[in-house]
Structure formats: C-alpha cells, structure tokens
Image 1 (cartoon, rainbow, N blue to C red):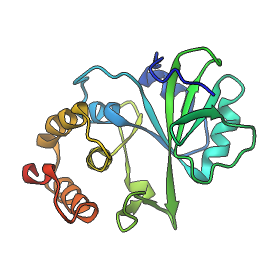
Image 2 (tube, one colour; image 1 turned 135 degrees about the vertical axis):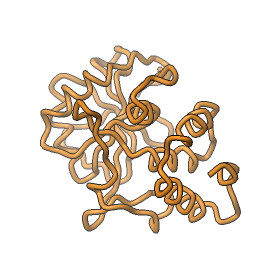
Image 3 (cartoon, one colour; image 1 turned 90 degrees about the horizontal axis):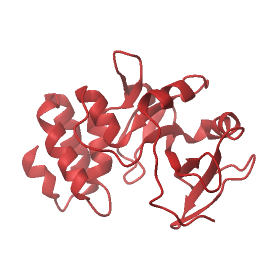
Length: 200
C-alpha cells in the first residue's frame, strides 16, 4: 500500500498519446487537460493527468502497461497494487508510477458501458453512445467531450475551486446543444437544484 498521494510528477499529454495510441482500445484524456485540449490552450496548471478507459478493456491496458509501470488500484481511499489478471469489478480509479517509490505519472479512470453506450455512474439514466463521448485534437489526440467532463465536475461530492474555475472558463465555449445536455444531466442528478444551473 502507498500513502504518498501528493507525490505527483505527471507525464505530458504527448507522452500519454504515444503510450496509449499503441493499444487496441478506446481511450481519451480526461480531467482539466481535456478541457484545455478543447480550448487549444493551457488555462491553468495541472497537478495530474487523467486517462479514461472502458472497464471491458482494462485488462488489455494492464498487459500493455505492467511491463514498464506499477499500477495501484484506489479502493476506499487506499492505494493497493493491482495484481496480474485481476479483474476490477467495482474499482474506478488506478494510479500509475514507474516504481513503488517513483512519483505518480498518470491516473486511469474506468468507465462502464452497456450496449455500446457510456453510462454515468452517478445516474444511469444519463448515457451517450460510446463513440459520441470522444473528440479529437487536430493532432488526433482523443479527449472527453467538455460537457461530459463538466458533468463529472458538477457531480462530485465536493466541488473544488479548480472545478468551478474550469466550469466558468469552459462555459462560454460550449455550443447550445452542449449546454442543454449539461443542464439536463445536472438536473437529473440534482433534482433539488445545483449552484451551476443558474449560469447555464
């Protein structure tokens, strides 16, 4: 088990692309970097870097990464080694480093799919065709659609200052249909209301 949760030295977007583009899987950059890729500029400093993969393909990713990287599964706030050929039924978060002592390099986020669609973990009535949740930069780097990334930030148990900043920075660039989808999806998760809805 590791406890050095702040020991981050994230690799770059280009390094992530070089690593994951060799794998026969669907993947994309997520988190704050996804929003910056959409805006084609770095709007703030990023302490980490997130990569989305599907649960159905996560063992393929393990085989590709485990020869050069050490992978830790996050469960109940604890970081324990992801064992060889261990199928992760409920784990959604993997932290990756070069060794047991090296800084964390990137984070894997597992998403669930059903009948070819992405399913939002916090409200399963929110879903999209899996091929519709990715966009690509001019260089071909896949990233999570901004409205879906903002939904994840809005739906967190605690909205961080950087999440609110990302929301305010990204909102003017959203297309009308993207805003409508985000508003509808937040309403589904928070029928009692949400602070962000008054801005959308």
